Image (cartoon, one colour):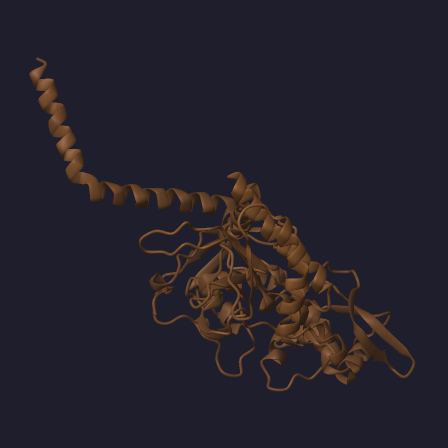
Length: 438
């Protein structure tokens, strides 16, 4: 498939390190299919091939940029953008909606928002910040021989060239932990241990959860969180965040970390739907009695939760009363609480005071009802503003402005297309009026 079937290659990027590079497609950029990694080749070999073959050139200040000299966090941004533009191949993957479990197929880099890199709008404390190099990162306990243990791992900066042994090892079916691999990952210390051979031995012997945590710490140190796309489920509208690029050096690390976070014993199990619904009714009853106006109905929903305008599953929602008309029967005010969202929080983040969260949710939705009765809901306006701000954080301020202008242009063009007969009649009337006044 030709490059023109993909997003246009941006002319320049501001990378996470602050370096600015220019990208230029070569004459062969549109020839044939996107470059794919050969079987058995090191991970990400197609990126180096794209530059070496002249499909794309990287420069900075008029000087050629050595791809291997880029810090890993810069290298992976370049890799994602080349996949987005069709210079290198990207596999379509299947993901499951976290809200309704529907299956979705997506090319993550194709959906990646690159506006902040294109416009140099970096600096978001969450999206543009990696875990710091040179500082210990907490991991599960790892034995260092018979006596000592480590509970932290410390990384140092690595370039794409220095990480080549890692790329080569990650392409094999069975990952062998060697001193060369430890150095390629930039593991400067495991606890107090700084010897690469001893660190390799400890990692080779540790359990899967601990090894996965070290792998995740590596990813969080060398991939900015902005390297991800947002996929909205066609079935329920929920937002699903997907890594982009999806293929990374430490495959399965996120899954292992998630399993550690979500594992609970039976003693701390989340309540059943019936128990949750009973407690919700008990909590809501005195609140509902204090609400002015017509009675508010409380619904405990056990199926797929509704989502807000940003695609985030709701804990609760409020629907104001409807007086009814020819096509819709009358309906009183309704507050709905979504059981599965509460349970998902428990499964993903660990145990929490769900009763307190439930009471706060019901109280919040009743505040919407009281605001409706007053005729103004400032809280709703604030919530929608937060959703808009989150979208701008991802897309970028300038890109959001460009899209708003393009949207206005499209709307204006469509308006003119639909109303042109009226404009002609208005023009004829104006000309007639001017002629009669002479």
